[in-house]
Length: 154
Image 1 (cartoon, helix red, strand yellow):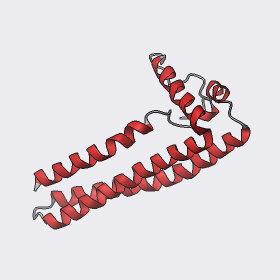
Image 2: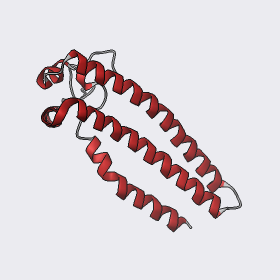
Image 3: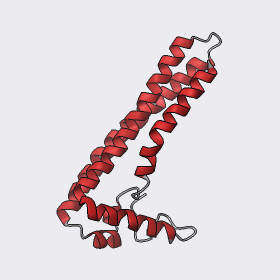
């Protein structure tokens, strides 16, 4: 049974790893508020507002989805730790856990797609290049990939 669970986990990781790598092409957080990024992408105030709205709505969904994922992890651990193992219940809970992971990845990807729509092809490519450039210049001990990040942001 453990082999089935581990096999299922490996399949899910294999399936979703391309989505994770796509999401790593752009910086986390509110990158459009960083002066250098905003200037190099020629963002308008309207585009910044659109990105802010998108970010807020996406974060709200992500908070709920992360909670659902944690709940599913807890329930699966609880079932596995019981003295009597109910394999069907464990597999059902595992499927729920994977669905929660998929929902979380889907929302992250949806944010990426919407940001791409706002930026268009050329500026999205510029953003990816900027992120690679900033990541390469990252100083030891820097808070984020860009030292221009306002102090009120995590």
